[in-house]
Every structure is written in C-alpha cells, then in structure tokens.
Amino acid sequence: MLTNAPRGTKDILPSQAGAWQWLEEKIREVCALYSYEEIRTPTFEHTELFKRGIGEGTDVVEKEMYTFTDRGERSITLRPENTASVVRAYLQNKLFANAGLVKLFYVGSMFRYDRPQAGRLREFHQFGVEALGEKNPAVDAEIILLAWEFLRSLGLTELKLKINTVGCPACRPIYRQKLTEYFTENADELCGDCRRRLEKNPMRILDCKVDALKDFMDDAPKIETCLCDDCREHFNALKKFLTAAGVEYEINPRLVRGLDYYTKTAFEIQYAPLGAQSAVAGGGRYDGLIKEIGGDDTPAVGFAAGLERILLALELQGLVPAQDKKISAFVVAGGAAAEAYAFKLLTDLRREKISAAMDFGRKSMKSQMKAAAKSGAKFALIVGEDEVASSSVTVKNLETSAQEKIPREKIFEKING
Ligand SMILES: [Zn+2]
Ligand SMILES: [Zn+2]
Image (cartoon, rainbow, N blue to C red; front, side, top):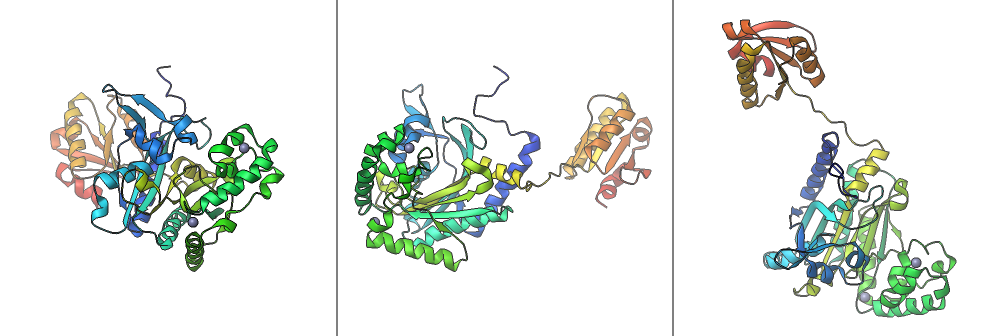
C-alpha cells in the first residue's frame, strides 16, 4: 500500500521527463507564435465554481469530481478541467479591462474520478487555450489552427479535424425539442443512460458510445435545419476561414461536447490509431459561461488537449525524441587524500557551467573509470595524490583515450576548447 501510488495516478520517471519537457517546450513555442500568454490558476477551487461552470447534471459534476470539505468547512474541488478557473481568474483580476480580446493558455494537472485506462488517468495533464472577449468566428478558426499546427509540429500524421455547431440559446431549444420527439419515438432502443438523458439533455444522446452504431441514430434530426441566422453565418464563416488556411475538416453532426455551456462551434481533433480514445484535442465556443459565472455577457472560445494521449500517439509513431543526458566531465578521485581536492574541482566545473558528476561511493579507480564511461562524459578528470601535490589534473578524453596531465588552472580551457 505505502509503495503504491493511488489508482489512476502515475509517476513521471526521469526516463520519461525529457519527453514531457520537450512537449511543454513545443506548447510554449506554438503559443508564442499565436500570441497566447500563460496563466496558472490554483489546483483547487470552490466546488460551486465547477457546479456552475460545468453544469449540474453533467457526468463530470455528478460522478467524477474530487470534492472534499476543508478544515474551514468549505467545499473544495480539485479542478476537473481548467476553463471555469480561467474564467474565474479573468473576472476576479479584471483581465477584460485592458484589451478586447484576451488570449491565454495553460498547462497542468486535472483530476477526475474516472475508470483508468490507456491515456486516461485520474490525475491527467491538459494543455489548453482560451480566447475571451471576441465573437468573430476568425477566433474559433485561430484556436483550431493553433491546435492543429501544434499537433502537426510534433510530427503526428493521420490527424482528423471534425467540426460542428451546437447552436445557441435562441435556436438550440428548437433542436432539442425535435431530438426529444425523435428519441422518445425510439426510446425502446436507447441504453439506460440515454433514457435518463432524454429528459435532461437529449443532445448528449448523440455522442453515446453504446448507441452509436444503432440504425435509428443515422436518422436523428440534424441541427442544420434548426440554426438561427446568427449561428448559420458563424458556422459558414468558420468553414470559410478553415478552407482559406488550407485545413481539411469533416462536419460531424454528432459532435456535441459533454458540457452545457458550449455554443456555436464545437470541434475535435482525432488521431485514429488511438482507437476508442482517439480524441487528442477538443473544444469550442462557450459564449454563455462568463455570464453564468457572474461576469458580463462575454463571448469566448477555447480548447483542451490531453497530454497523456498525445504522448501515447507520439510513442505509436515513434516520435518521442531521444534524450541527451550526457555530461561533459566526470571526476575520478584516487583515494581519500584526493577527495576534497576532487570535490573542489567538481564544484568549480559547475560554477563554470560545465556539467559534471563524480561517484561518491569511494570505490576503486577502476570502477570509477567504468562509471565515467557509463555517464557518457567526454572527459574523465583523474586526481590522485600526485595531482594534489602538483596542483594538476590528469585529463582522459574518453572518446579518443588520449590522456595528459595539465595544470589545474588550464582545466576549463581544456574542456571548453
Ligand atoms: Zn443560434
Ligand atoms: Zn446511450
């Protein structure tokens, strides 16, 4: 028990950390290109924020949140996603005051009590962007481009962009009504979950995994027929921008997203080889959320991408770059008398920004030389009683095996040269 991490959590070991750092660098690169700035919000928030922001009745709020009462009797929840937190920070810090459009990104851990499986953990990592304060569909296109070009820049191919519109409070009720009627007629065929969804949120039935392949799904009413002029124009403009940018997309009328605050644009980027968990990024417009959380009516659009899944996809394609952990120098100390001299040399190397290590096990010269070779260092710096007495260092180039004794003060020159 003590030596097992909780179910659904995972250590990122030194052998894996390099891939994460590389991925995070790529994220920062693309966000700088698109001029999105980083925001870091707390790992936990008041439970109420997520209830309002994600919506009571959603699976996330009802079944998946890590909620607890703290010692001050407050209900606290580990963030299951970051959009609500970013909106809260946007309002609390009045980020809307300076510019019309505020463009933010985040990278961090999220928490959901879910059944763990490949690429899906209880503590998982997301990269996401939020663009707040603009209703122009060009912003929807911009964040889709950002997600798309980011994934492509990692080397991933076989990516598919699926888009849809989920309407707005003006036109969605009409669609919802049509769906309710249609699914009520076919209620016998619905799975148990969907029969419950029929009352609360019939749109969710469209993305039910259990019912996906049943015949009646194909004939379900499409939102196209119900859109108001505003939503129709928005969707057409988005398609126009994507086409102008040369990005291929597919319209998927069943793409509805799990969360209630989404309006108009919904999108998903899939990487097919991942199978059932093929979505690597998804998002859309959420014009209703900021008001829901207590701000002025403010349009916004964003997406989130799962880093565990992206890394799985990269591993499948053999795209995770090899790590270079090599150091420049390895200090070898001959006997206790040379230990302090060796330690001073090690310290001075690091102060000169030369990466260096030594074996602290007081082992034989021979086994220290083996450790030096294993470390990948270019130079072994050997110091014994002779070197201490003459204030020198014996330098062995481990690539060529050439060896020479040089004065202590020439060592940086030798290594940097
Ligand atoms: Zn509408
Ligand atoms: Zn179902």
